[in-house]
Amino acid sequence: MTWWRLFYHLIWTTKYREPVIDEQIQSIVRRTIYGLADERKSQVWAIGMMPDHVHVAISVPPKYAISE
Image (tube, rainbow, N blue to C red; front, top):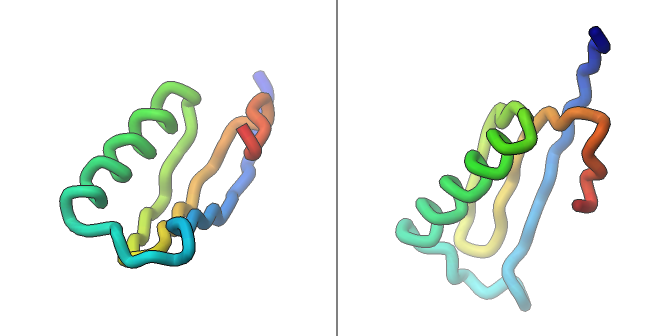
């Protein structure tokens, strides 16, 4: 069994930093992030959202490239 411990701080911004992330979009983004993390056996440690950007603290297995 392989042991790994990788932590990443990922940040996404909206186009032109437009403040378009409202509560409804936050809910969609949060469900999507947790769903994708679950599919890839990743651990989401925290999600922070602002009207124009999203922060995610996550551990991702080394078999996945972060860019994917």
